[in-house]
Length: 628
Image (cartoon, rainbow, N blue to C red; front, side, top):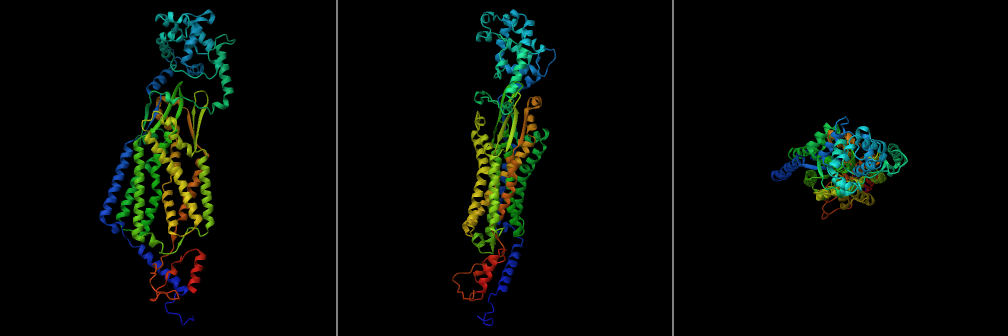
């Protein structure tokens, strides 16, 4: 067709591109109009939205006032205080005469179980038998068993006490017989009060120092020293990683030693030196939840541009999950306090249980997140006309026009997640009471498993809440990242612009907004930074000297930091974007001529192909079709 034969409204290349630019300008004008979301839906819907946010805030308040968890101990805290006060008294009074070295010998011999055989041997065999001679019995304990002179003054009273109680009949044949020991019970109790040594039994760590004195060729002090040296040399490597193996099922009573509430935890963390932990929890779990609700009310009622509304709702969706820092801090405490300690010679098992306060806090956060997503959908449907309209309102593209960039980012993201998940995430060291340290190492999977292990569920009065918290952890830390990356793989592999796949990547975006690996990192870092001080604040000032505990972050923690950045940018880059607004879709019933225009001269649907896109291939296709 010659130039003069072309109709005046023929869509030449320059006119077509100019037409697209005009459409974009018109669209920008429309999107710059200040209008509130409430203007679209009316005051009735606005009232229910506001009511929902108010109820959500009330649930948040309830969760923060209520109990989030409790820390339990197998040892009555009153007894711990009693022992601490007696063992610290090392003067010439009648109580607490034994020192720390005496306590170590006492533990190596087996504790309370060794007392009767040792007293019986001294009374019958040492230097011909001490019988009722208290001074002789004290020297026997110094010479054979290595106790200090101040400590052994308490031993001399045991035999005379037994005679006064009429125990000779039970003990004359065998001083270790059960009947003899039962008769001597009051005398043994007085011995523990005098020495300050705990009335508990310990596993004998080395038989060479178990019951010295029975036809040995060395003195007991030498045997104890040799035994201790032998223990150190033979177990130097294993003791460092050897944990106590106390049977939690044999614990008759669990004593509450600490109540986890929002306010109390912050106050104790601040006083205990864990100020960073207190600040993080206040900002993310104390202030941010209510700020989000206020912003949602403002976005709903205040007139603003469509672009501003869309941006605010998008960032609220992305940042909503950071409210969960408190949830992961509680999870960190529950896992971290699963300890088997030796406090001054006493076997102590500690554990923790969640309470409904932290469950309510998670539910309130989930409620808030769902409402944000609902308002986003309502806003998009009313402003952009829904997905059907969106599919025809301009050119669509990804952030990167070259697919291999997204592929490399996806591979890097998946690799970082796998390596970070299986590597050591955090470790906790505690004294095992035998000169070594018990090392507990956790990765992402084992942290979750620790929430529902045997120790956590033993004597647990709220197993349902514990399992719920475990399910939350599995979904947010393990399942949601895997689901998101699976959707990303499918989207990139297909690389199609169909509605189904665009909807798929939108779902992936919503799920990734609630995948909370980065929130776990913040909560874990905050707890670990002052974990020792926090544990000592739980134990109380009178017991801090008895606790030897350390913690640290593993390589998996640091690998997951770049994962969070790369993963977030990858998801944002995969969202389908529109460059310009072209003409609405043309009714198929309208008659088109061969020149690409309708009878009334309006351009056909061919101009809806990504005009203004950065994709060079797309621009070429547009130009070719226009020229044809």
